[in-house]
Length: 211
Image (cartoon, rainbow, N blue to C red; front, top):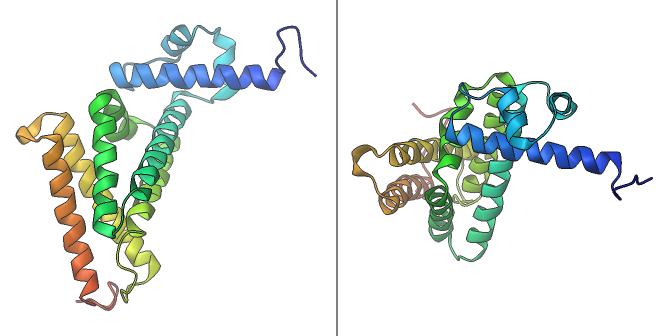
């Protein structure tokens, strides 16, 4: 049943949630998590105090939702970029190129994804782990399939590549070492190609049994 403005209560609640996430994304990206309050988020979203608890238990939960939205957008962009390539190395390059271009256009996204998420509580940190594993799975799917490694071991290698990429991305957005966007792409590809080549050689047979 729809009310006077043509929207159901659920639709209006969903719109308010979106406004809170958008406000959180802007404030976390500009001020940082520690300098952001629930009250400031509500002011930015143009909502009354009572509407925050309608969608989120606390600021940690909002940070988790903001991060989840960023990761969803990154995953979609990466999948689209990979789909336009042929070959694992080309796919990996397209993926990191898409990620760096996204952060280059909006450095605040990088601040949230790479730094502010670490300031959150247990909900945000669990969401970060989930996001890292989603990205790692995309990378793992690009690694050689004829390896003797287990699926979990390949996923761990994907996670290692994502972790290395995150450190390089953070150094880049912080302006360290004179890193350029292109240099970050090339460095991440050195890691990916080296691991892919090692896997293609058939050694080690298993990470758990290697010494």
